[in-house]
Image 1 (cartoon, rainbow, N blue to C red):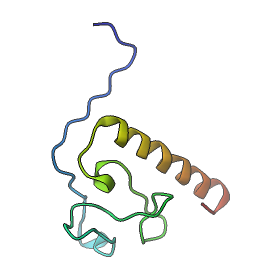
Image 2: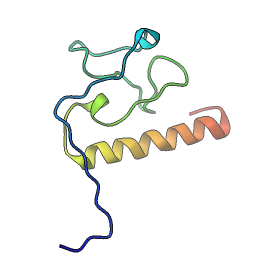
Image 3: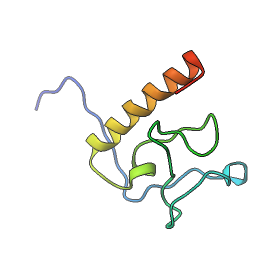
Length: 83
């Protein structure tokens, strides 16, 4: 099969990369998903999240779209200081 681009995504359960420094990020009741606003920003300023760690396990299209929306928000935040 010919392809111009292949995206490989493997995972079963999102695992937020938490250490003692990030324990103040809000999680859902299962403690497996990060809670974000409509701009993919967490409850902590300057920290954004997207993909399976926000929505839970899903198809690559959902994670990809989530990443694009989060990237747009991050770009606006860095360029203009607002979302």
